[in-house]
Image (cartoon, rainbow, N blue to C red; front, side, top):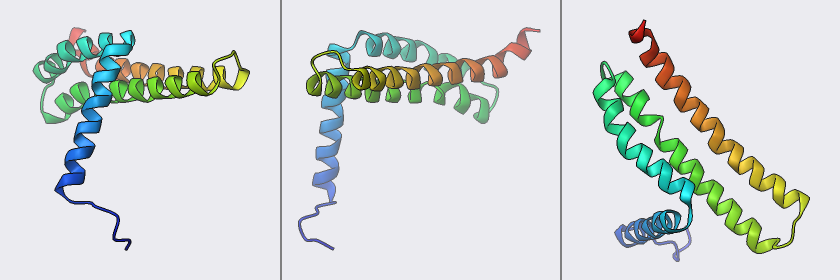
Length: 123
């Protein structure tokens, strides 16, 4: 194992700080991320409250985090693509569209989970 790989507490702390910097940048720059965080703040406790048992609570609340994670990845893709191809480029546009589609699919997943868990109670 190479000696230059530091996997101790200091590296974990640095990774944590870098993650916070990424979240801060996402909040500052991405309106979609801000909206999704606001929805998360509302829906996460709502999911814990409405869920009947641990599995339902985990499904309702847990279906929200992948949307935020995908939004961050989509934002990273868009940032990188914009830097590498400032002019319009078909492949760059496709990459950005696919990142957006990933967020959309996870939002559909969240809606399906919430619907499957909660709609039967309404009827």
